[in-house]
Length: 275
Ligand SMILES: [Zn+2]
Ligand SMILES: [Zn+2]
Image 1 (cartoon, rainbow, N blue to C red):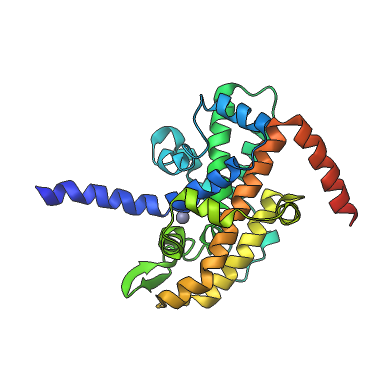
Image 2 (spheres, helix red, strand yellow):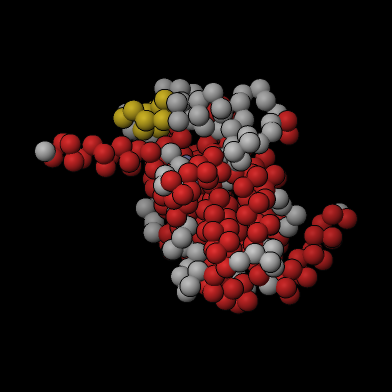
């Protein structure tokens, strides 16, 4: 009796674990963003979410894509680039990738004719995908399904590279809640923040993550036993990726919902282009 009850639950968890940063990564990304929203953007976001926070919905998309009404969003969490392929030459699949989905959802956030329902969905998807596009294995190889078929060990127990990067590595890097993650990594200076956010696009974010993915593959051949040294080596990268995702998410939302921010940002972008 117990067994037949447990199995579907376990297989459900396995399916979910392949869908993005784990809960910790998405919550941290969203909470960092929330701390960088301007008052106008925060008010607009909470109006769309009926008073809830972006953290509340940070992982919604991972559950929704397993339900029939949102099955079409399944491929929007990642983009695969095979070994030997060039990032610039790999087209998005027709169902859409994390890169094309971010362009589309951000466009809806900026569309003044979009309904509240359309903005709600675009917002919760943008919050989630800004996290996923910074997870190196979401820009992994097609041949191994983004590391899902790249078998490694985690402290001697069998697993795969994707799953380690989604959750085991972040959870091992620091035993922090998402608020503690934010308190400890969200410490960039205004100049450092500008370097991270000004002029970026879903295309460039994806390319940057893909470059990290290449290094992860080099550093983690099949059969690697991930242990303390691996965790120590990659912890700074996890921290950087959470921070980049959070700051860029805030920038996207401030741009969409705060006209003053938009004007100031436009000036910064022009200055950056002239350099
Ligand atoms: Zn996801
Ligand atoms: Zn994943």
